[in-house]
Amino acid sequence: MSIELLSNLSSKIISLTQEKNVSEAEFYGKFDDIIQVEITSNGIGKIVSRSIGKYALRIAIGKRIGLTYSENIDEKSIPSIVEKAISITKTAPEDEKWPGFPKGYSGKGGLKVYDKDLASITPESLVKFLGEVIDTSIDSARKAGALEAVVTRGYLWIVCSSIYIENSYGDSISGSSTALSIYYNIYVRNKEGDTAYPFIIQVRSLDRDKIFNKVVETAKLAVKFIGAKPIDSGKYQLLIMPEVHGELVETVFSPAVSAYSIQRNRSPLKDKVGEQIFSEDITIYDDPHMDYGFGSRPFDDEGIMTTSKPLVDNGVFENIVYDHYTASIEGKKSTGNAVRRRLNSVPTPAPLNIVFKAKNTEDLESMINMIKKGIIVYGVIGSWMSNPVNGAIQATITHGLYVENGEIKYPVKGVVMGGNYYNYLKQDLIALGKDIVNYAHIYAIPILVDNVPIAGK
Image (tube, rainbow, N blue to C red):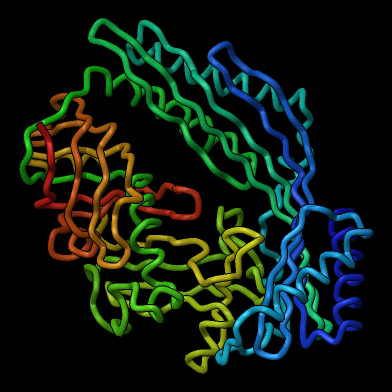
């Protein structure tokens, strides 16, 4: 029904733009059915169910391009929205590089991004499921040695999204997807002190095994971080766990492979296609065709079919990701990587699922045994201070374990890690891990890195 509603709205808007002699037009509509559950220290709080329809209209008048955005899907608002778009566009500067809106919409058939079980879950079943998650978290922490364990403030979101794209050339495409996000902190206390550690999971399907395995693992880890303290400044080996690694990838590597950054001289990978940038054991794919991958999609935000491709192959930088506009600047075709960060912004190119496929990997125990003097990094804050223009890393370790000669000694917090991501995965790389864990759409592995500067006490 939501796609039908967006289609009807789009056809009326596109038709009116043509009556107004607009050169070309593009409609991008999104309808989200959302269930939000509040998590409190007393258990499950309020449950809110809502539906949000919104759309963006981009038009071109010659080489002038304008965009309007609306959350009003009442058809009565259409004339004012179109007039607003025309007014904005007429005042915009001409873009001599404007290639026109993309044509020839298509999508990857048979891709699984919509989970019926997740989309049809009842409020009663959802409350029961979340209750099991919370109880398992608390029970697991107590079994791991916590005298007290409490799940503190957080949330659960289920979002069923429908997207409809249409242009004035007669192209249209639509699709639906599901997503589940859970976040909360588990507070734990024993005789040595107390701490809190976040549980975070983002999946497209109601994968109970994956969810509950992570619940148990997170609760056990929380207890290990009680009594954390800073260490002396110096250079250390760091075993960076997958989710933290994924956070670094999202901050410094993902923007660097975008044609948008490269064309604006905002990437260290400019003119590096075909060059060795990482260890030859590292291959990284942009794979939007993984079933239920968190960034998977059959078509991008311009209606162009997505493509699976290596970003890095055996350490060699292979592919830049393009949307329609950036590809046209270089006389190329879009790679199907257009992403709208928000509906009120224009699409820009970005990887969709970044997936590590490494060779010569080690299990976690073996990697820990390799550490002479270092930290296992499970959590950081402030990674946004890292620099995608040159790969410089800056983040504060909030949850870590200090290791000497393969033996875990005590928990660590409050120290700042530095270095450079490209050095991490090349000259300073000691080992690559087997386990793949997603941080949203980044499917990363553990990495053991040498000579990382730490600013401590």
